[in-house]
Length: 421
Image (cartoon, rainbow, N blue to C red; front, side, top):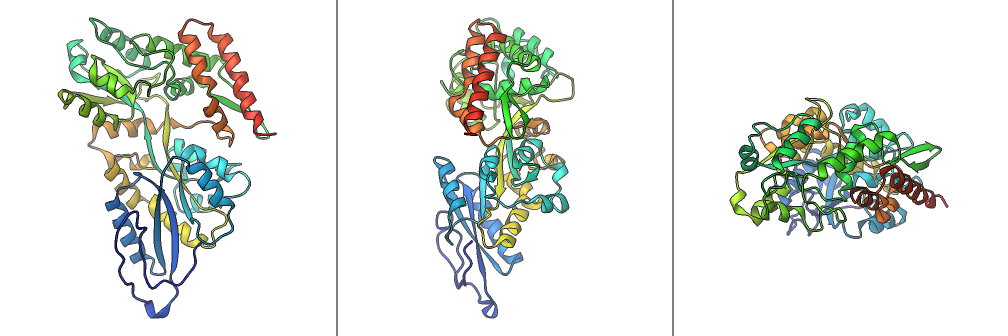
């Protein structure tokens, strides 16, 4: 999108200071590829190494990496996709569940051909690949993933005589019930942790919403499968003192875990750092295992967060943009990023790249069965209103699950229909 002659090449000043003179390559034109990446997605050292290698192996291209903040990014990306200027991004990092809202209306390049021919689409993590699709075409290319695991206290497990992490959901319930005694909480699970609930619903074969056809969606919390998922959540949540009318950030569950005798929480492994900062006595006492599934040896489904890379339709350097996407999501730099940042790589076959770290290994095992929210551009309206949270609170407070599920499903349908007007 910014196609110009360069005598100087700099990575954005927000990343690196200083800029050295570049050789003129005999006067040949050099093109700048502008890349928007989110704050803290990659370290400055990673970006420096990647930039040096990319520019060395692509002599005609220079990288202009500009770091963005998540706050307000949706409106900023929408404006960039609709702009007709020459100073916008050629590649954008977006949340995996945001791709469809940007792809709608033809504002992103379709990268299906490259994905099928060169990029190993069949091996991608489903929680990144599926939300990157819109109308059966691939617009978002998986970059990195993170998902929830069970973080537990080894000392409390040992005191309860639990010698190994549970392998199935039934075992998990039994172990948690044993841990929930003598003033200890078997698990701290906030009543409105709808991301964790989603995994239980997916395990049962249900979903939060389903497509009726033609891009029309309806809420699906009232299906038998979704109700079974909610029932499991109810039974597990009762084995601790998590508030029924709040989510995992109110209060922050890391603080609750660190300050009390709580045996387990469901969280990303990185939360362990905050727990140990809050309570240094827990250094070395934290363990991790994948959220158990219904069968031994098969982790439960989990919500997969993370990022995809997209190429705006209004770029005037599609080839340069594709070269950046190919490099960042390819095996070499994707595994480097995963090791550097403790992420899950974008392909199931690359899970061994993070072997050796207990938390990341548990996360990678779960990511193989990861999912994302329904792939409709209007899902953001559901999260903003979030009838799922209200539904969970009412059920956990003793209301009839089927009645409340029907009410919540109708509200989800209304919110998804509003976007069609």
